Length: 328
Image (cartoon, rainbow, N blue to C red):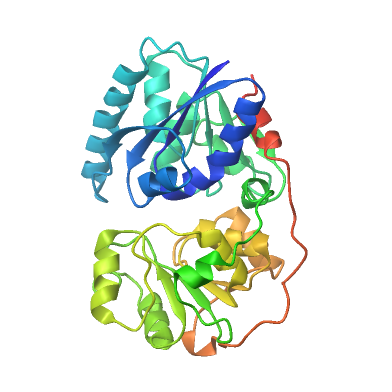
């Protein structure tokens, strides 16, 4: 089977990498397209994953997103025409869903946050399979056109793509970290500006609490990286690093996004969320089970060395996700 995988954001590289490997091991031909956004291309190059770069991120405004969807979907359609793909898939990629529909290629989408309304109204209606965690109540997805298409899986997606992962201490030396001091890993919110345009000042107060400590801050954009450099007092990697190993060795993770929070949970590292949007079912469950904590006051953060993992790692077979993505 000839399979087309489209990657539009850096976390999607991590999610799809072991799935691509599994599909190739099973005899499928897989081609990868990628959008230039955040560290997507850097990660693909770091992992030596062959890909075709098509398009870039157009900006955060709704009009920019619409233009980006139109332009990139057409570019993908031109690229894929004549390549005779049997299936197409992406993790939240609207572009591949539109292009696949135009080319009449059966497509699958995957996601684990159910409140991205515009994105899901496109993907769920155009795709044949909608692959999500079983924590998400199916009725939350029906309004997007997902009825009869849902292929649910147990646990966290991070427990699948990190199943074969073992942390490498090389990242500590790469960043010049002191193993005797508490290490905090921080992931920024998606907002372009951390200090000036972030709607809630919680994350700004987190940065003020951690300035001068051994805190590695992982920005999403170059604008955030520049702002952190001007602020000073943080360790900010210049390029894509082995963030999963960093998380595994950290004493604490504080993240304003979903993927890094759940990676910390999967790897047994204590984690706080500063996410200020509407919580999805996966995060609701993690908070309810005490596997993740919600941070409301940065002064409550205790910077101490941890002595053990928060729990035994759960490792799940990535092929189970492949089966759901390729389900008829």
